[in-house]
Length: 381
Image 1: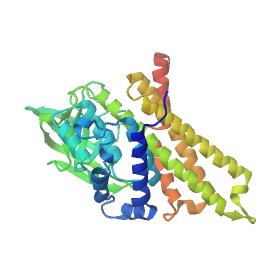
Image 2 (image 1 turned 45 degrees about the vertical axis):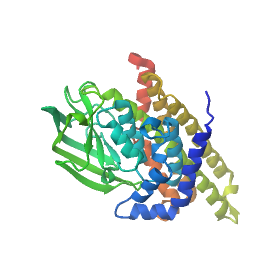
Image 3 (image 1 turned 90 degrees about the horizontal axis):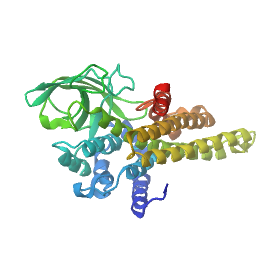
Image 4 (image 1 turned 180 degrees about the vertical axis):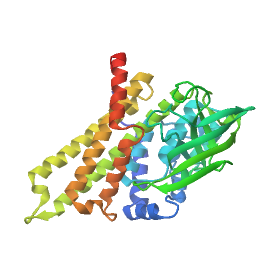
């Protein structure tokens, strides 16, 4: 398997790395998170119009750079290093995935708006009772002439306060947990009948609780096919998990580097604590967890276009490794820094918080262990 990057992919990495280094330093990031908006639309425009980052994974005939999942992986890793809060995951990876794979009457136009930086998206899929079951839906979309009427509630919709559009999963037929009967819709965020309660998350992002009350949708709001949306949701969610793994790698690399630098400066008993063998061993263990996560993320990304079973197994295996690594690297970084590691002023605590959130997004370690076991053993599991 070839793990070498193309010249174009290396150029993309250099472009994103320079953007993060020059325009997303730690003080800038803290100011963004503490601002009323919680993000910088002007930087989003820079990504779109000056750097072309938002078009990286899209086909050239849609106005993109002709890349794919590997390009998303590269961008997300560099964004992880800077803890970039702008909604690349929700807009480019998730919404872009739904629109590219699912099609629909509005897909080409909306992808063009994403590439141009005019449209931002949030993925409204989680419900309080659903846990990690993507088919467990009480939100309904009932037929109304040629269109639908949407009712229900979605929880922890990350990026919703910034979104111009929502990707919403709803039940159009069948029972609450049936695999069949799930449909995906694109919904304008300002549509009549939508109520939001916005709040900050522990890792510096913004999220919303969203209520849909008789939201009227046209037939062109459907992404994919009616009643058969679950396979599409699973595919795009797996792509999001692979991209999250890359973000985690970037965040863990930076937290590890910060920990090494701090251990070289911090003195105890007259010598740097980096000279203590037990801390040396701990930092080597951190390094190994990061490198194993790199390998698993590469594997998951390269298998996204294989069969459903192979894709799911690779993604779940990667999520297990990344979840364990996020916990170990994050907690070790805080432990070596001591109490000051959790202060707001010190960056390493914010990397720990983001890694902790990534650990639970789209399924915990236990959930993906069970998923991998079921896929591998079938009925024997």
